[in-house]
Structure formats: structure tokens, C-alpha cells
Length: 276
Image 1: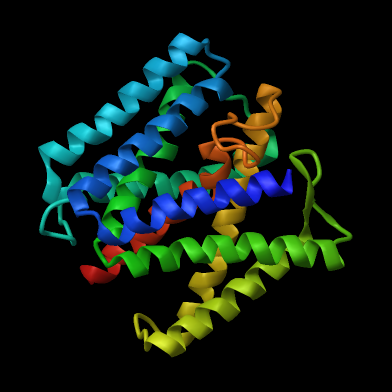
Image 2: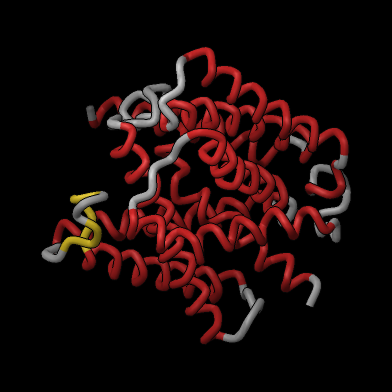
């Protein structure tokens, strides 16, 4: 299993890095649209849909992203303008941020089911802003987006090792028994250390130090929430992985669960700072 995971990870990086650094913004937007289309196909499994329904959901979601890329490229950062003022972009991020920061604590506490048209709408709230953020944040530079990805990866890695070493108290035993409070604290510490190093090395001065630290901790907490949410949905659906399209890793949703909660919030903060 470990060998399979490593091989899959290497293949993914071999595909991701050239696309991230060398493709045009328009091409990147279309590539991410396909990626999100697969995630939507997996979302259909969480809804308990048949294969045909899942395929339709994936195609419609991917094509919607393609349509937005073509219809208004500047508004999503796929054209020349990477800091759009289009109101629907702010609305999309605002709805996403409200969902993750305000609704999700109650959802995790009450373990609400995901079903019907409401489940489709929630899928749109989860996936479409993620696609939008992956396109817009790449407009800051491929290195910037990779750095944001690394925040989530660092949180996962630090949580794993600190949980293994010190984990005694379960974080959410009825949702994800393997996660511990010590792991969550370790994730915050790891991300803060990463963020401090990045700020010093690259001379970032986007906000005061205290706010920078608070933002790093906030992003880490939101990434953990995204991870817990997908774990809850899979538990409700009675499945271990969202799919098996990534051998050893499960599905696309399993790889981007933390990014779906993190990227839209980061993009919203970026836009607010750009227009302050």
C-alpha cells in the first residue's frame, strides 16, 4: 500500500507541477475544471446516486466551470486581470466562507445528512468556489498557489506525526476516530513555523505579525474542519473513500477535502486586502 501511495503521489506531482508553472491561466482554468468535475462525480457517491447520475453531475459541474472560464475570463482570473471586482466572485467566496465558518460547526455537531437537491446545492458551495480560488490564486503566481497548498500539506503532516507521538484525546471520535486534539495543536504549530519561515525568506509583509500568526492558525483550523466534514459525509454514506481513481489515496475529494474549505477563504481574504 505504501509503495502504491508513493507512486501515485509522484505521478500526481509530475502532472501538477508542469501544469501549475508552465500552462497559461486559461489552460489552468480548464484543467482544474476537469479535476473539479471528477470531484463532483465523487460527490454523487456521497449522495448515494447511481453511476449515471454521478456522471451527469460530474459533467455538468465541469462544463459549468468551463463556461465560466470562457464567458468571463477576467472575472475569474483566467484572462489578464487577476484582481477582479466582479460582485459574483465576492458573493461566491462569501457564501463559501459563511458555510465553513458559521454553518459547519453546527453541521458537525448535529451530523446532518446530505441528500436531495440540498445535497447538490451544498456540493456547489463546496466545489465551485474551490475551482474559482484555484484559478484566481494562481494569478498571484504559481509559486504563491503552491505555497498555499503547502500550508494544508504541512497541517496534515504535522497533525499526523504529532498525533502519533502525543495523541491521547480524541478530537471528534464519532466522525474521525484517528484524529486527536494533540494532532490538531501540532498542525497549528507546524503551520505557524512554516508561515514564519516563508515570511522571513520571501520578505512578505501583507499584514502585521500578530495578524499573520492568527491567519495561519485560522487557516489550519478551517483545513481541519474541511477534513472532518468529508469524513462525516463518507461515514454517513457508508464508504471508506470517495472513489478509487487515485490508487492508494482514494479519490479526488479525499485529496482536496482540506483545500475545499481553505482555498475560498484565503481567496476572499486576498481580495479584501487587494481592495482595502
